Image (tube, rainbow, N blue to C red):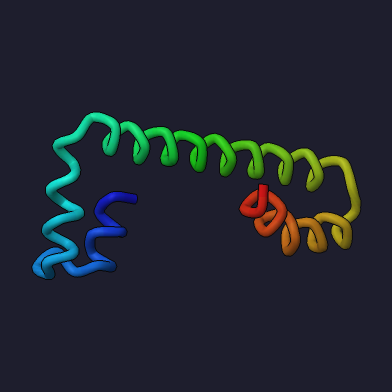
Length: 76
């Protein structure tokens, strides 16, 4: 996430250099690590839920939930 944010800002811009310089602070690094872990766990939970739905319901229900579920997990 840090690299994506840095590339979005532009690593050679003033804003990008200031952002990259913040990596030296433990609290800044910790925030990115926690966010990455939470997102990773949410994606794993979503995948497990989708597998359960696919295995236990009809194709139509599985298709409908596969369309909506990413938004539900992203919103929570």
